[in-house]
Image (cartoon, rainbow, N blue to C red):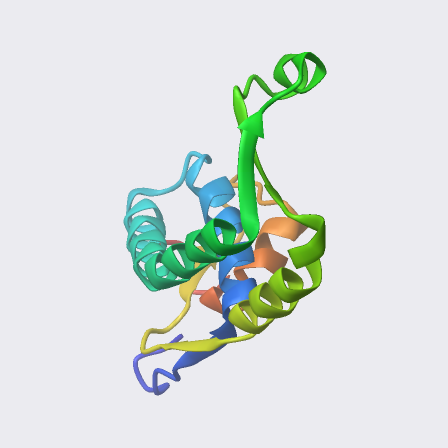
Amino acid sequence: MTAEEPMLPITMTIAQLVAARAAGLELAELDLPMQLAFDVRELLRDITARLETFETQRRALFDRFGDERDTTELERRATGDLRVREIRPADQQAYAEQITALLAVTVTFDRGPIGLPIGNGVQIKPRTLVGLGPFVQRDTAGGV
């Protein structure tokens, strides 16, 4: 993005934003140039702040449609969890409809994408780029 280009808002669904958070966390695990590391940190803070309301609403749906129970021995060995929450069979359709509607809500960010440098040795998986979508672009300026 050059200084002459206007910063366009980024609009996406909550589902896309959840994927972007996961991809951003993968990116944050890499050794990055200092400026890019700061940019990734700021992006993750923005994403996390936008997802707070979603997380509150998602937990409320679990409270409304789910029950908590002790895990079985097999589940404990596989996951290490002592308790698990499950959606009641009678409520699965209503839960699915409401969580689907929640994930379809759109949010808009008034920020531009961060530039990912080409050719400085940073290796990023394509799935990370797909997950981050419009939050990233190729930095052709030769570095960050």
